[in-house]
Image (cartoon, rainbow, N blue to C red; front, top):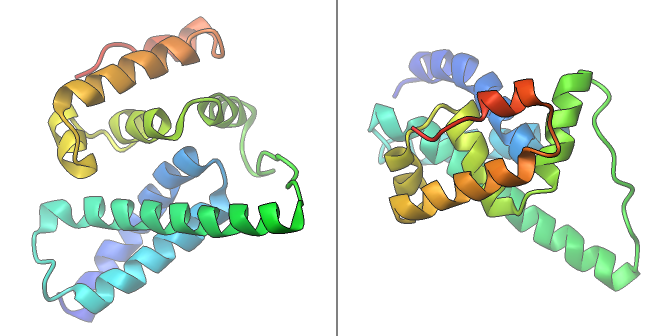
Length: 166
């Protein structure tokens, strides 16, 4: 991949991947940092990562892993200093989006990750299973449990859009 191809891909993929990771992480700035770091890591490995179809998945997975590692470091730091961070919803989110982010935050991380991949990244059950390294049945179960947990948190209109799994 030459620099011009990378720039075109980055321009289209970066906003989409930041949006997806924002919903997983619940923090846009964290998502931007993680996706940016993933793109930097991709550039260093671009010769080995030639499969166009898996590039977004590689970036998303790498960004998520980077964010989780950062969370662990921060959690350890808070534990050591006994600081408790204030929970906040980013100001730039609309009310509907803020409601969705708040509801997603209440899900276990694996369910939240699966929901975002399926409904926001528009990945199939098989693609999610491959990306996360789990069985398709696990993906279906996570989606089922996540929808059940989200239903009372979101109104009927929003919950209908999180209908059956594909």
